[in-house]
Length: 197
Image 1 (cartoon, one colour):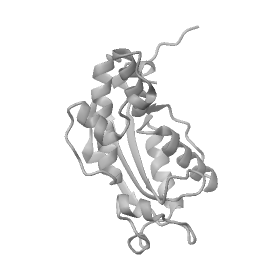
Image 2 (cartoon, rainbow, N blue to C red):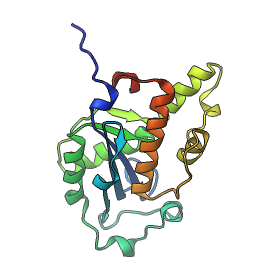
Image 3 (cartoon, rainbow, N blue to C red):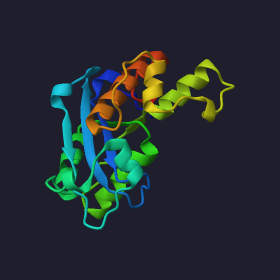
């Protein structure tokens, strides 16, 4: 039996971005989370979720990550710990599809931390705008190698005529990803959720 995939705009997408203490998904802590939903094909900024996260003592924050997102230990001390933030993420992810830019990093880190905190991973469907960028580039020119496709979020947005935002703020990057997703969905002519995976 073949199950039909729902129309792309009939589900809720939660666009998520993480700012972390580095780029090692095995050990670097989450420092900030930004999430914004897309409902009926519209980004709902008024429903967004944003929080800093207090890392465990002894967690490292690399100088490169501080340079990117400007988050330092001092301003994270009053933030909620990861154990209080994950249920907020989980409740949103149960509602729909997880939308990310670079799922290999963000989803890996989320799964790691859900397991560490013993919070059940909701196993949402995942749509990754990096994969959609690759798919659309290859549809236009099958000869392109991965290295020839613009995958950087800011540069990809520019190629699709989207405005330039300051990068490395979790909520701003979640909104940036949501906007890029809508542009890519239109470019690909995707009609169902399956068309986007």
